[in-house]
Length: 138
Length: 122
Image 1 (cartoon, rainbow over the protein chains, first blue to last red):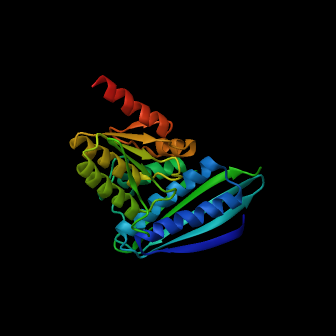
Image 2: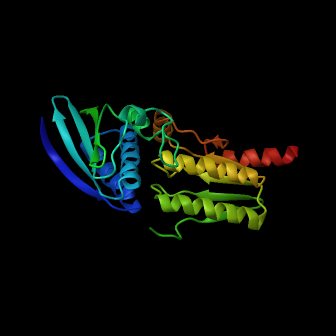
Image 3: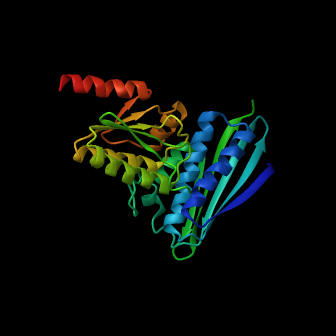
């Protein structure tokens, strides 16, 4: 699995959520994803970047890699923060669960939008969320 | 972010707001404040949110629209969401979002029709 394209964005303010969305919209479009998949990917970015901003006191990063496999292209997004961590990941993944003032659709919804999702978290240390979306090469 | 990026347009007794393509959280909050103040000022009966330019609708935006609809309703008004793009509708549904009590229409013309029809029957 080779990575041709890679980059990162700091998530330190509310405005950085928009920056992350714009960067990934361009990257995903350039990688050949269609309009609907680009919208799915950018929406997932928005949810995950906001989680970092809201729950991790702006100590996070988003990193992205374009993955290439025979016949398909993928975008890997890794959100890392040094926030307070998630006490119960299974509970956080449930639809309707929220510790913030939101709809509680964030993590469970992101899982439906993306093809792969992995969360690791340690209380007091931080959280890493990795998501991947695959698309066929046209 | 430009704080003056949103304009609320008064059309007879309704308000029209065109939302920019990639609105930040502050723009969305500003939308709510501006709309509620304009409804009071103009005694508007309704609000049309033109989201035909919007290419991302996440849970924060959806919650704010849903809340704004509720607030507009408490002030006696009806909210119509006009012009959602297909990719946005697909993504919003997969994400599990809902827009509360807002009515949706394909475009602003049809949103205006709803208000025209409603006012005839009153």
